[in-house]
Image (cartoon, rainbow, N blue to C red; front, side, top):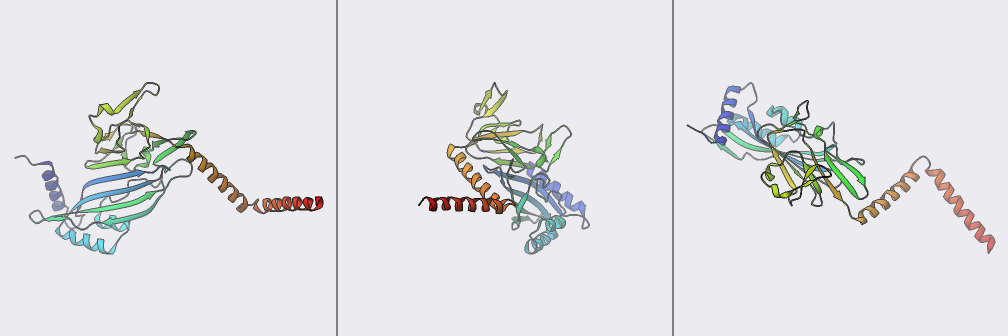
Length: 284
C-alpha cells in the first residue's frame, strides 16, 4: 500500500514522538521557510516560519510557552528543537528587533494524537555603512552602480569543505530583491524558475548567464547548492548621487565640529569673521 508523501511524513513524526517518550522532546520540525527581503542599502528584513508537530501532552506545553514566553532561548529550551534559531549568523551580521511570534495551534488529529502549529521569527539585519549587511556584500565599483553579492558563510546552514551549501529536507529559502535590480546571476537555478530558459541571457564578456525576467523573488528548496552564488547590480539615478554627496558633506562638517579639532576650527571661523568685520569697519 502506497501512502502520499504528506501521510508518510505524519506517520514518521508520530513514530518519532511515540519512541521519544516523556524524557525527550515531543516536538517535531515539519518544515522551515526563510524569507529574506533585501533593501537597497543592503539591510534585510527576515521572516522565518517553523511548522512543527507535537503530541497531545506537548500541545499544553506549547500553549503555556506561547502565553508566557517571547524569547528565542525559552522556545528552544522548551521544544528542544535544534532548528529553533535564526538562520543568519551573528558572526557575519548584526541582528536587531528579533521577535518570536508563536501562532495558535492550527489543527489536531485525534486519531494520531498530533497537533500542528507555526512559530514565526521576525528580525532585521542591519546594513553595514561600508559594504552591506554581512549577508549581502555591497560594492560600489563604479559611480552610481552597486553590486550585491550573497555571502554564503552568513547563512547558518551546514556547509561542506568544498563550499557547498546543504539545505535540510523540507527547507525553503526565498530571497526578494529590489525591482531595480539588473544583471541577476545565480549559480543554482531557483525552483520557481525551473524550465524557464527564455528568461536567461548569456553574456560572453562575463562568461555568465544573467536572468532577464520580471521575477524579483527567488526560492531554493532542500538540496545541495554547489558553490552557491547569487549576485545582482543596481544603477542609481543621478539625483541619488547628488543627495549622497550633500549628506556626506553635512555629516563631515558635523563630525568636524563635534570632534577633538572642533573647538579649534570654531575659533578659526570666529577669528576670520572678526577680521573681516574689522577691516570692513576700517574701510568705512
